[in-house]
Structure formats: C-alpha cells, structure tokens
Amino acid sequence: MGIKTILGSTVSATVLLATGAVAESLDPIEPITQSQYQETKSSACAKPGNPYKGVFYANDFRYLEQECYTGEGDDALTKFGNSLKNIKLRDDITLDIGGQYRLRWHTENNHAGTRLNGEDNDFLLSRLRVYGSLRFGDHVQVYGEIIDAASIGEDRPPRGIEVDRWDLLNGFVDVNFDVADTKINVRAGRQELQFGQQRLISPLDWGNTRRAFDGVRVTAKRGDFTFNAFTVSPRTVLPNDSNPTDRSQDFDGLSLQYNIPGHEFELYSLRYDEDDPERTRFDYYTTGLRWKGREGNVLFEAEGGIQRGTFGPQALSAEYLTLGLGYDFKDVAWKPTVWAYYDYASGDDDPNDGVDGRFRQLFPLAHAWLGLIDLVARENIEAFRISAVTRPAKGVTWVNQFHKFNLASAQEGLFNAGGGRIRFDPTGQANSDVGFEYDTFVNFKLLQRMSLIVGYSHFAGGDFIDATNPQGVSGNADFFYVQWTTNF
Image (cartoon, rainbow, N blue to C red; front, side, top):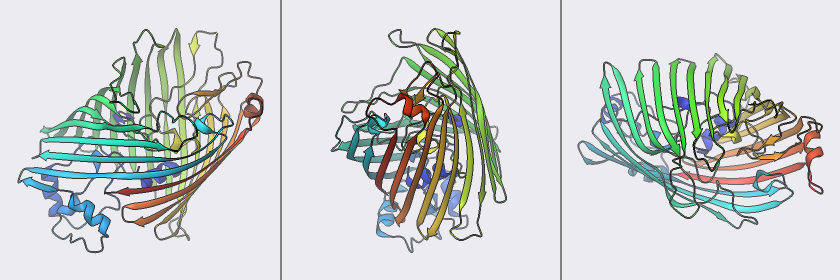
C-alpha cells in the first residue's frame, strides 16, 4: 500500500480493482519534472493507454512533449484536453489544467444507505473535479484541485459520501531534490492517498465525495527501492461548508517497496489514533506485507498482517489476509482474465475477555473487493470471490464476479463498506452464513476519454441475515446503475 498503503476512478481503474488484475504501478508521490519531460521528448513515441490516474496529481501527459507526437487520430475531446496540458508560461514554468465530470444513476432496492433496511432509492449523483498544476523547473510543484459533488432526487437523506459542494480536494506544494543518487520528494498540504490495491488506503473513487488528508508525506526513491513516510490527519466532509481537518486523529505510516519486472513487494506499518475524550479513543498499529506479480499468464497476489494496540478500554489484537490466484487467457476469444480470491479479517469471539479481536479496515475501497452493493467491509469477514473480465468487442469490457460471505465470528456482527454494523446477534445463534452476491457490469469506451458503465448486482442473504432481519424486511437486495464519465 504505499506509504503506501502505507501511506500506500476513473472507470479503467475500477475495472482493474474489481477483477483483481495486476494494476498499473502508480507512484503518486513522485511528480513529473521538467528534466523528465526533456528525457521523454528524445525517447521513442509511446502514448499511454490512459494518462489519467486514480489520483489526478499523478496524471502523466509527458507523451505530448515528444517531437514525434502529432495528435493524429485523436478525437475532439482528447484534443481539447491536451490543449490544456504542458502550457509554457515561461521556459521554466509549466501549467497543466484538467479534470473530470461524472454522472451516475442509482436504483437501489432494499439496501438504501447500504443498510439492507427495506428501503428503496432512485437518484442521480453528479461530480465535477477540476485541477491545476504549476511546475517551477525541476524542484517545485504547486497543485490544487476542487470538487463539486451533488445528489439529485434522493428519496432519503444523502449518505456522507455523496455531497460535497465546491470544496478543496487537493492543495499542496511539492519540493524535489536529489541526494546521493536518491530522488526525494516532500509534499505538504491537503492530499489524497492511493497505494497498492487500495485495501487499506484509497481516495474512495466510487464515493461521490472522495477522501483526502492534511499533512506531510516524504518519499525517497533509489533504484528498485522506494521508501515512504507520512503523517496526516483526515478531513471531515461537510456537505455545504469547507471541509475542516480532524485534528483529534493522526494517521502515520512507513513503507519500503521493492519493484522488479513482474513483481511488487512491500512492507508497511500504519498507526491510527484518536485522542478526543468525547469520542471512543484508540491507538493501534497495522503492520503488513504485500506481494503482487505474474509469471507468464499466471497472476498471483498475497497481502496480510496484524493490528495491535488499544480500542476504547480494551486491547486490540486482530489479523487480516488476502490470497489471490489468476490466469490471463491471452490467446482465447474475448481474452478472459480469471481470478479466485480468499479474504479474511478477524472478528471478536469473546466481548468479555478484555481483548478486541475485530480488524479495523482503516481507509479502504471495500467496494472493489467485497461486493459492489457495499454491504460488506473488511471487518469480521471471511469471503470467497471468483471474477472474470472479458473483452467481447473493441472498446467493450465485461466484468462478472461472484462472492460468498461468512462472518469470521458469529458473535461480532456484519459491517458494511463504511464500517457501520448493520446486523448483530451477540449470542452467535444466528449462524455465520451471510450469503452471496453476484455483480456484473459492462464498460463501453465511447471516446478516448469518455466511457459508460452499465451494472447490476444482486445480494441473497444467508442464514445469518434471515435470522437478524427486522420484521417485514427481505434478506435480498438489488442494485442497478449507469455511470457516464468524461476526462478533460
């Protein structure tokens, strides 16, 4: 995770995460410098498939500086977006402007608010992001990004991840320098964090509001090794006011990442604490290891670790584990990529022993890994997933995934993607069978930087859900959505 997750979307990033594919390695901490642009201009033409990254401050438009790039074949939207990039204000000052508009329609049956509460909801979510980046030579970058996230026509009060009107999403200064063949970057200010497979730290692109922090991050890169360190505090999203920093919470991390062709390794440690006496106080560390790679057509991934510390009056002692194995059928029609995953996050078997055994998921994108209906978090869960991504036609990607969920501890309860407990049987008599979920969506690439997703998900509750359902509430849920995204 980059500091990675330790420290440590667009639609393409969502597809990669949802299928478990070995995603493109991102280094959001290292900005693009003027010297890097010069290096690219003299290199062979290499236009990236998607210069827009999961965090826009990592966008890579260096290919526009290549002498051999003419823009031939680009559509009008792409040409407009490119015209806003690499604007030379002076020889040593470069301006980039860009952003994204996204519109998504939801039809939710029996899971409004990800609560499985018998309510239905139909509404639109609108989101605009606009960013500007000023690079002063090789050593300084000033980056700012605003967001306007709105909900239209909801039948119930909007969720906390849906509305954030005209607010600052990113605003920071980068300073870059070299020491003994080591590239060092210092970033200070408001910033999104995205690392690894986003299991513990993510900007939460599926949400309409996105997630950001205030603080400082330092990265040192030498050869195949990258070291990250950060100390930040989360921002609090207020729908119609400026988003303040939550000064009572600290989120700190260290990581060491080693990348070689086909493989990524990372060791990380994260600390999260709350010191406000009016809230539940906690202070705990998450220490983990991640490995991702491929050998030929075989794909594999493993990540796991432990949490130790305190939560409220109890000691915290928890664990998590992910194992994934996939295969890339490159020579078969529709070029399917198939994955099988196992996920485990511990629960608390005995609430009276003075030790809390439930794993806390930190700041994740649970949506990508534990079902698109968002009824399941990486807390007190054992999950099995089979997924397949196929490409039935040019510009069309079809994703299917099947999940089976069980509680890790029958006494702990079920937590949704936001970490809220939505079902609970302290006796454990309701069994641990949560149920299964089927997700399918098709991504249509309409233009180079415009896409449309049409998706459907169905959740079927198991014995635990049936036993804990409120009277008159079904244990099944359906979700249909259409999402249009354009980048500029």
